[in-house]
Length: 328
Image (cartoon, rainbow, N blue to C red):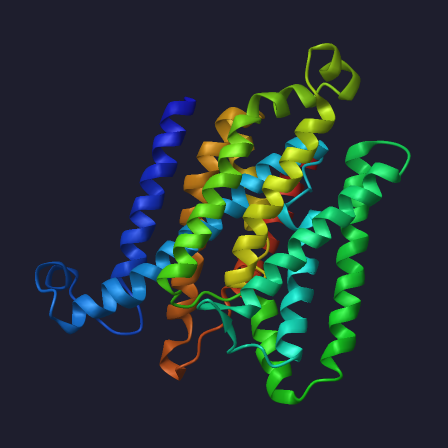
């Protein structure tokens, strides 16, 4: 199948997923009534509740997937994924501190402090990873990968320690956030996420061809005129901006940035210039559908599992299957 057809299918999949996500939920509604009658209850449910949440899922899935493609190309490691930067651990630690000090309901200029703290933690973790990797000998890709793992481990240990100090109610709030969740976002947070994601994604798309050249190795890329360190710094900072913004709103959602690039690479090959736009569509569609499963799986008992648990339950076995086929 040609790359153009795959890109078109990914775009169609995203549109279909958004329509399905807005059409189905815990309460039955008529989409026709919602569109034709702005004063109806159906209109309020579809356009004020479901659609913002579906758009949040689409933006988050697209962002995590395109960052997964970029990091796998940069680090030349198919197991790399957005959280390898340590941004997940940093973001989670920032949110944990905010929750610990009871800032869940506090705002600055109308913006909640928990997302702000999470974004600051993610950016700070990325700066640390870059500093450690720059000082470490050996392969740059390996240094970034190992530094990210260590930063995430330290952040996870700190969060575990903090959880023992807070009251059960706050511990429950923190656990739900760490599992990854999608809720109805405010218009401001949705717009902010779209802006941050667009800026970061634009930078990654700008460097897509250069990331292809990096697969030849740093020395070969430099001989071809690529400023390797500049590309690495731009990719890491852009990835941090995208993932930090996502995590600050949704919490930790894993496997999307790992599975989607793997699936597309088996179909399209390793050309980052094609993988990135395709991942935007398929990644967004994948997370929207996982959220739809989360909303509908336990509605008869009036509970909703975090979407991060759904992505892990679906993505884990799928990734093992991909590994088995690769090494069979």
